[in-house]
Structure formats: structure tokens, C-alpha cells
Length: 285
Image 1: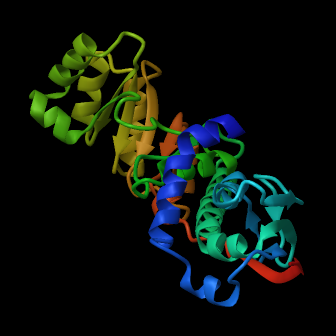
Image 2: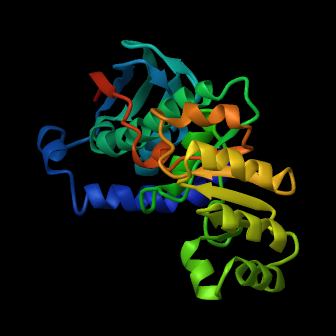
């Protein structure tokens, strides 16, 4: 994420997060630090993992005070080692204290997602299958969480509902069937949009192929059913597996030769990566 993109897209969310944490003032910080003093604090890794979100971490502090400086010793994608010094943050001590939790919340969450994603990507190495995320993201955190998936080596599915056509079970029910749903999408959506259809059984697979779907999502099927579905599709559409695709069971589908596997667990079940700001020093008044 380059600085311009980050400021345009991420700043409003970061401001909301800061306003949530500082509704009027930071009473604790203002009690112990009533005036300006320059200070320095270290960002430390407390466990091994993949770093993601350092620009967002930094932006929390520069939104509070543009004079804040962050000296980085690592960048996004870096393999963090427990106890490693990752950055030093220098500026108004009040800013360092007041921004600490919000900055760490972003960095720990994003790094946790990148770390989890990386472990799943490694399971798919040597296969044709690409790992995708989903829209199962934390409200108002999607831009950060999907970025973290990319840092971890995964790919993004559609960003939001305006980004592509995905006909799920309720859309199909509303349209009256797979054929009707695909036809309606072809008539309404711009021709540059691919049409993806979620199917739950082999009859639906056949309908989706015959209707001309570009991508067919095999949802919550058994390994045997997925294998048969891929034979039916026979290269006439891209294939995607979805439904309970977690780190614990995703490897079973690698031998099937699907094009994509999408996993909501990347964003809704990844634990945070433990990171901490330590050793604050007051440098001058």
C-alpha cells in the first residue's frame, strides 16, 4: 500500500478508531505528562510471525502529530523473530502513549492474518491452487485485513459487492434457478465482469456449465463430489472450492486440481501476532 493510497482510503477509518479510544482526552496520559516532552519507544516482536501493517501503525501516530518519526528496522512481509526490535517511534510522549493501543490493534491484527495466511499458502505450494480470502471481514477493517492477506501470500477475492458477480444460493432462489440467475447477470452486469456461481450439488454444476458461468464455486462438497464436479466442468469454467476451508483441512483438496480455494478463516479466525511497545524513554523537555 503506497502512502497516497493509504491516506486516501485508510485515514478515515484510522480517525474513527482514534476517536473511539479518545472521546475527549486521554486522562491517564495527561495526568502523568501534562506538557510536551520528547520521547522514544521501541516496537518489539513477542512471537514469531509475519509482519503486516507497519504503515498503518505509523499513520496512527502521524495523524495525532505529523512530527512523530518512525525508524523502521523491518517492512511488511518480514519474518518476525521473538524478541526482535522492529522499529523505534520518536515524538511527543503524549502521542506515543495515547496512540499506542490503536496502533498495536491494527498491527497485531494485520500481522496475525498475514501469519495465518502464510501457513496456508505453504500448504498449497507445488499445486496449481491459489488461496483467496472472502468478504467475511471485520466491519470497517476490510481494507486492512485484505491487505494483510496479500502480505501473507494469499490473493483477494472481490473487495465488495460492487466488485464482481457472485450468485449464491439466495440469489439463485430469488431468480428461480441457476440458468435464470446467470442469464439475468449477463443481461445486467457490464460485459467485462466475470460471473461466478455457487453450487451445492452436481445437478447445479451441470446447470452452471450449461448457462455459461465463468467461475463455479463448489460449496461445502465432499472430496468425492468435488472430484466429480471438476470432471463435469472439464475446463469450461474456472473452479473454486469453498466452505469450512481452514488450515486444518485445506490440504485435502490440493490433489483435486482446483484453480482456487477461498477461506473465510483467513480473516475471521486468525489469532493476533503478539507485538508490544516497550522501553519508553523521555529524551528532553
